[in-house]
Every structure is written in structure tokens, then in C-alpha cells.
Picture (tube, chains in turn green, cyan):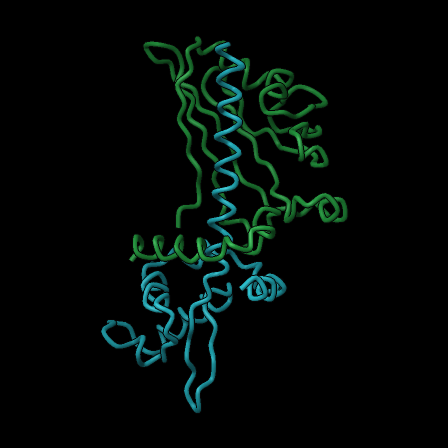
Length: 155
Length: 115
């Protein structure tokens, strides 16, 4: 089973501009929608509060891994068991499983290629709950179809 | 159906073993493929057509059972194994959810940089 997410996006801007948007904590906060307490420093915890509508109760807490100028920015971050407001508030998040997020930049003829990967989902237990998942009773039939497709592909 | 999901979610202790790791093996994937038809199978049925021994197949079934993908039910003296899609479905659902969040974030990044 695939345990990583990979996204590639072409940006019409020089690599230096993209690097700043991704690694300056204020700029990162703008587009990611998080209010960060301070700059990203490799090896240090970055703290803040999510500002994305509907998720404002979530804390941002990541550990910055690598900052190789105009090449690689990476951090690990936790995945809480539930994003439901009440359950999140009650949870102990010190043991939340983490994944690794990497932003890789490459110069192209027209700008910059950004490759984002998130890996390590095999650290995450199978019983993670999502609000959408809980609300979506009709989703079960779709699940079965997804699994059939997945199993057919894997077999 | 939702009831079934909930009761499975309640089985917390067991679900903490990683589903991905359990599926990261060809034999176990083949067993899941066989069982996903919905028909419970005995160990003999599952061993048939395989180069592996009964003992080896049983060991793989226990791994799948430990993460809740497979359940054993007793039928007389025999154990039958049946597929439970809940953990796999939940993992997929979760990955899809995270993936969708990144799509949206990268669109915001693109307009932040280019506009």
C-alpha cells in the first residue's frame, strides 16, 4: 500500500522567490494558514496556531529537519487522532504519530518546480477518525469500492 | 453499516499496529485479495494453490488479524478467516483527506507567489 503523498507544481517565479515563500515563517503562514511564533530553525520545534477556517482549534507543532537553501526544506509534524474540537482539546498530543514533509525546489526554464512529499504514513494507526468520515454514513459503499479497486490493483 | 464501523473503531488496542506494514508483503496481499470476495475461508482453502505451508499461511493470517484486516470465526472444529475492510478503508480515507489538504495549500501557495 502506498504510504506517501507526492505533489508536483510548476510555479512561475524564480527559485529564490519560492524558497522565501516556503521558508519565511510569515510567508509560509500566509498561504498555509497558520500563525507561527517565530522563524524556522533546523532541529528546533516550530509552534503556532492554525488559522484555516474550521480548524482554528488545532495547534501547529512541527520539528524542522533540513533547510538547504533553494533546494530542500523539510519538517516532521504530528497527526492527531481526531480533529474534532472537543476530542482534540482533551487529547494528549505528545505521542501523536508523525510524518515527514519535504519541499524540494528545482529550477526550470519558466520558473520553479516544487515537489512536495509527505511520507511515513505507516506510523499512523489504522483507526484514525475524521469528522467527515464519521458524518458520512453513505461513504461506506464507496469505501468498499475503493478497497475492491485497491485490492484488484495490488493482486 | 455505521454500527460495524464504530464497533471496529472501538477495538483500539489492536488497531494500533500499522496497517500499512501488514500489507507490505506479497503473500499477505494475496491473502487479502482472496478473502476480499467476502467468503470466509479455512486455512486449507487458503493454502491450496500456494507454495507455502499451512503454518506459514497461518502466521501471515495472524499478522492480518492483529491489525484487524482479517477476523477468525469458528465453524465447528475449524477456524474460518474473513476479511474486514474497515482498517484499509480508513487508511485510504485518511490519505485522501491529507492529500486534498495539500492540493488546496499548494493552490494557495501558487496564487500567493504568482498574483
